[in-house]
Length: 109
Image (tube, helix red, strand yellow):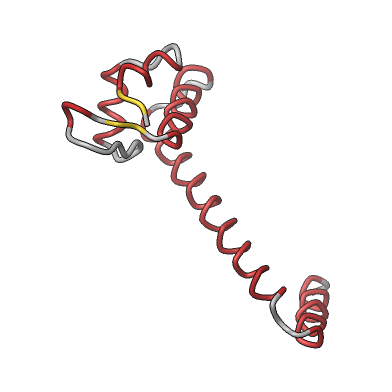
């Protein structure tokens, strides 16, 4: 975990005002109260992405928020697909073969 000062040092272009705005919008989710926010690595990654979307690509806050929402959805879907793959892998061979055949049939439609 890192505090606000550490977060600001790790990426140029990120200001405390921007971080406060991202926290208010729910784009960063620090632990602790506003006087002593502590940020996890995921917050650093999100702050870097938000800064790149704004500074390098020129997206406004609303559009950047939409992009972050889509990234979150992709992350969630990947996790769900991973669980589904694990559940399929635990099935008997005949069941796995039937699922594979169904996937091939559906993909051909």
